Image (cartoon, rainbow, N blue to C red; front, side):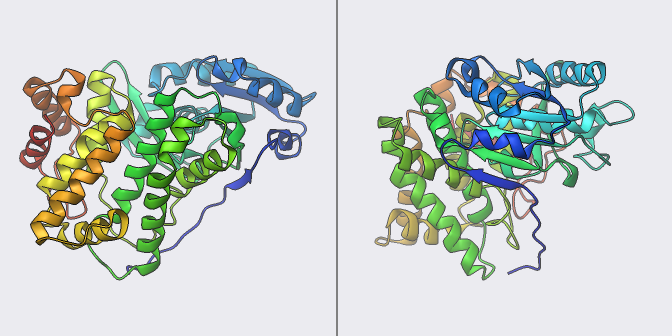
Length: 385
């Protein structure tokens, strides 16, 4: 195990009817801006609960943060913050809304061009407005971490940033708020959490036994609950386990002290930016192909993952690895998620377009060994056709 430090200041308030706790979580004198995506939080009553909990505070609202939040939209929220003298932000939604709120919190106090936040990976962030979150879509783990991804629509640049200044102060996780989610969004959330876990686990052994078993437990949980999560939207126990597992998948614990990959995400980001494919679905396309191309460097962990998560323990090493990758692909397909570029009507032209974008963004040394160059990324994408 590598040396590491772990720090996560986000307070989690979990359970049914916990939105009412906003009455004590948000400062009583705060001028609050609620940030949301579409109209679902209004339709399912979440916003009514939020407003009731905020009581007599000065409350404003910004609506319209996209599933892949855009710089252009988020800058309109920054303008509203400055115009209305806002001093506290509250994200109500899924990972995209929370990601967008992180950027807005930092951009509202940034001196200079806020896109520099993204270009610097967050290194230029020195302060941010305080904010909390009410999670309505379990998927990204953004409710308990300090990272975010934002797209500049004008150039199709989808970049990530991270800063100690953008941890949520608190996140309210009420599983009942997920009951009305479309099945596609639930499936995407399961796939997203699954790949988050894999990216921190399926690299090479470093003796981190607790992190390995923790990650394997999260993967097994997602596999176990996926059918019920899709079939029974109002099963509280299942939705609770999904919500907490997705949070744990990316709150820093399973990645503490271990090598991490993230090449699947970097390649997937370009597919989303260019073709507007749901983030989780790009991950389901890239991951099985990447595991195949990178099987030599990931051999030990692939065999471990296959045995512990999928129960694959017979046959030659090559056969076991083939079966492990096939099981991973089949899991995504069981969620109704296509795992080939052809499933999104994309072919070789898309491969070349993504390679061009990876090169333009300096994504030429990806993976835990930094050995995924553009030629290897092309092999991965071609394996995903």
